[in-house]
Length: 333
Image 1: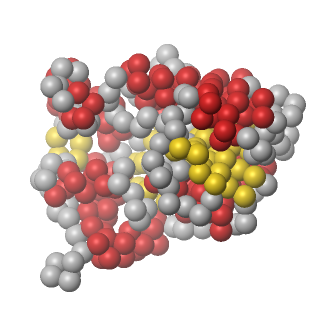
Image 2: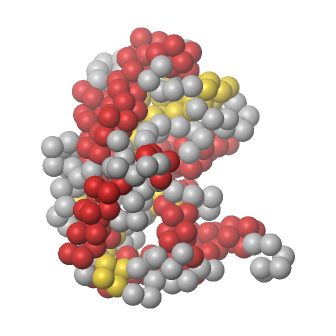
């Protein structure tokens, strides 16, 4: 099968492309920067129809990971990449004769702030999702699933908090905060959350493209995770230990963190460096994520996709620590 992977220069996108190559698939990657992968590569913007047409030419399936991922930023830019980019890709893929389309989404598309305890894949709702990322990902998921039709099977996969060796997004930011003395808990970090070791996210996405045309799969959304909920305190502490960074030593009340995020978001809108300033130190979305339980019932996902996670949390943390060990200089080691 010939598969296009968008966003292959990202952490998960690159891992998916490598997983497909290892499994013998004919892979094309689309991203803005060089991927360094031994496969056909198309470079450019996901909203450029000429670039997208070139990328989808001759492929049988698409795994769409390219997105603007941030906890704050210009909403118009989120919309351009996450919504308009998805629409352009779907139109081009369908016109080129691709038969399978996997929309990589997020559980946050259905999260309105209340705890998610043993939850399934509730419908995406851009009106109740919190933050520009979640709202535009909800819009793009709805657009993708609406395109499901005979001859063009669409499935949405929502991996939750993907991490592992090489992760500069979730783990990288946590460790940067820890080393700067800014890693703290909210409400003692007692909220239970589920995460996904990257190997498991990769195998789930490969399973989804293989089963996309199954009657029980296409036209639906599925949440993917390790199915091993842990407290925020345990997860942050173990990530810090794996990297040899300071563990979170203090906690603040949720209300204080939320208000700090509210103020920081508005201040960042007028930051002189604009998008180059990166994310604010706290946002309302981040405060909610760190203080609210969100873990999922994986039985339907595993049954329908014929998939099981193979790397548990303990092994994931062992691999993460080993990777950080390789980054340390001989003097540091």
